[in-house]
Length: 392
Image (cartoon, rainbow, N blue to C red; front, side, top):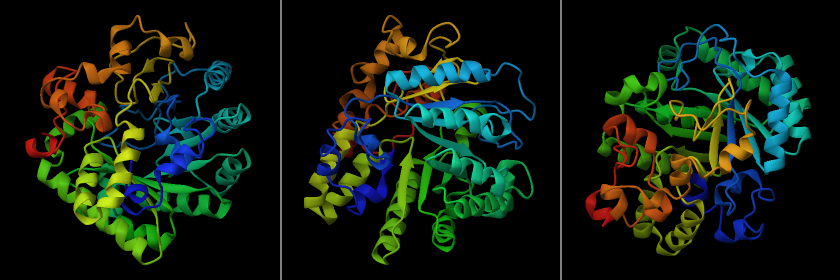
């Protein structure tokens, strides 16, 4: 994650992270990306079932349950292990996590074990009653996916009315007092919707939005040609920075992040270097703390059936199953060549990534995208939009 508001609008200083010793268990959530120990944030896809049919779903979600989900008892055993391992956050995802009836019990158990519990949802199943339940169990955050205004979003989601139901879910969370934010996946079909998303943030008093760059995984694999060009990516990141600054200058700041393309970090720094060199130097220190992509190190994923992956997009490769070995053992077993390489991936990237001067703050960007396009997991990420001159 690249905190556009944190970095570009001076809402976080290097000393903020240092004050907590940069230990993930002590850092507040908005500083977790700057932790030094990199205990993984774990995405647990608790179910593959979903009530929608999103065209870019990385999980190939289905309308019916697959029947191989971890049981409630297995889920609690998993959460015991994650807590003991020092995992700071469990992100309950899917499919649609609220399609799983015991999600509140699982989330409550995660909180009871001292972890922050958040959910990633399409929002359409969040009733007033379920929102109050999620508030009562101590859920930290609800991220609701919207990929544009009504017509665009509903086309992406495969269901008329999904947009209005998601807005209702947002209102129900707000009424219950749960922090709620938006998740938006950028592509050629909806990039023009970004200004409208900022308007929606302001009109509905939504405090946070994450803009995700497209990753070629699951059903999203068919959208490679619909990804932005390098020039379009630069324009979109500039637009996001401009709109974030505009809200900040008007006294209506929002937390704005971009996700899944760590070229955004150097790009933001280079822009600041022209606008505010002093702030640029501080941002560079924060980017070094962030360390860029952390698949297989600072983020991990567990599928509904217990398989462990480097991140939620790397579903085609499993390091093992938590039914056979605890996550903590699987995650630290460096006898697996790929796990070992991911822990030190800066030594394995090739081409322009290997020679890039931003490697320490980008971390080699997304290996899944490189593999999807070239067949080589260590090839340069094709979505890196920095020029040869900028990386030299």
